[in-house]
Length: 610
Image (cartoon, rainbow, N blue to C red):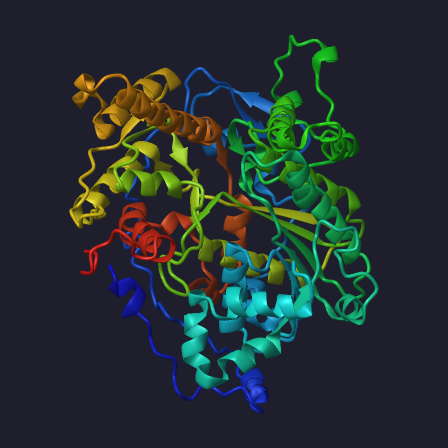
């Protein structure tokens, strides 16, 4: 599988225009697509999923499931909740309505045409997803206008340093490096403009500067990709970025004179503890999922009221009077407590949901699109398969299992992990930008980029895929010997999982083999075991709302967006998650990508992964 990353690139034609004084020739070309990977291997050739499609998608038979209607919660029986018959007809119409002419169907959305010459302002620009977005734009639309990147830094020099080290020199951009050769850095610097700032500050940290005025005058599209994605982050930190940050950026958007669209990158899990098939609908200010889920006999006095202004004040003031050593833990606990009180599983998704509410409340006449991807993982296809950065949601478990450090986990075996590759999220984002930026309307449109309804990845199938990969391509231990891992065990109760952890940890440390050494060494080993077990249990507690998640994300709006794309756009900007062959993606794309780009090849034999 090493060939996926090194030998599958198609070298760009030498006729591609050089940068210096030849940008005009690039602009005159109708398209100038550069593909490092012409086709991804992790796509289904015959339209049949590698995961059984007739598997029931409910997680627990005793749970009621809910279908979100325009302004109310329709509680339906939990049988066949995912059938089309359970969805009201009006739920199949995009929020805000949609009309598509025959001409549009023939010509497509016009993604490249729309993006040409457009100026973008992107926050969170050094993050995983934003970098994939920037790379795709520059590779497919080289005559795009300026892309202003908000970068947290002390000064302009520091911001430029981050731009070069974290974006321009990143391996992700190797296709563009091959295309432009010696002119690569000049091309990148002609398009990417670092802007010193911070979404956590009321004025984005821009203050009154010439550059701030230029951005407000020029920018056509704002993309807010800034976020803190730590599940159990300090409440004050998460609120500052995920909620206040969204407010600050919308405030700046209102100063932009020719803004065509404000796009918020959110997460499908802002839907919190909703159950059943979850529709693509916006939040209104003060919406509370706990209130939606309350049974009818609950007295009105117990219905929680979500007051976002109060939450903002609470997050800021709660650390006052605390000892410095206690602040971090207290604020983490406060975030989880507030999230669960109102029906969200953790601080991350709660603060992102409040951010969405504030955007909808503040938008006025500004057109808004909110992209809600599920769990974003490595690229499936572009610019090359398997690229990723950092440990995403499921990756610590995947890697620990491969190293023999974790042989089981707390998860519903029949549950679904909703995963989507990063390049598909980016393609959907660009399609939505063009669709709603072409003819701006003062409405809000929501897109779930998710797989749980159309192509579910079931946990017990995922466990088999992981074992098959590591069985054929094991990690190597410190002595260079292959690490053989057993089949991953899946537990649906914390008690059973905890018992397994103790047995497994003791066996790996050899505690039972040294009883005659006296109490000192076994006590030390017991302490090590206890710490290891507690860490695994803490991880399982944080992940439990996702590994036993009862919601499934409807993606009807996203499917309709694909339907109006031309065939050429589908080839170049496709995001059909139903076409993913999960077995091939997990075994031959994602895990090799993790080992190459996150592990940097550590613990891997020199021969290609087969």
